[in-house]
Length: 159
Image 1 (cartoon, helix red, strand yellow):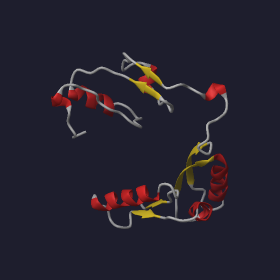
Image 2 (cartoon, helix red, strand yellow):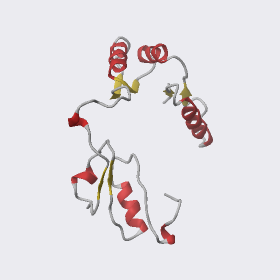
Image 3 (tube, rainbow, N blue to C red):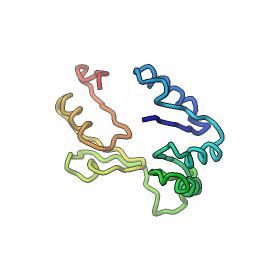
């Protein structure tokens, strides 16, 4: 499997660093290919390329539509999108949630079982380091997590 990564101009250095980490981890040099360049031109070329079987795209809805259309003209490749609104706040009171912290959250609550994209934090108590790791590994999500403790034996960096 080969991976072609076309980063935005804002994330080019992160993508190059990612490729360096992949190389350092021992992957063959041609597994991850960074393709910097003009978004529309590179994106179109990737979308129509007959030897690319899947495209995963984070873009605006408008760009997503163009990539979907281009992808269907080649080999009917699988396309996955995460579409956003151009990094602009959607001006609708129904789409806004204030920064919120939920405390005393339990493992069986909906908030721990479903992904929330927004300024929301869930606080769960724990009794052991092993419990923290088990909980972290018991989810399909995980955009971010942290452990806050006063106990120095929990201040480990092996997770």
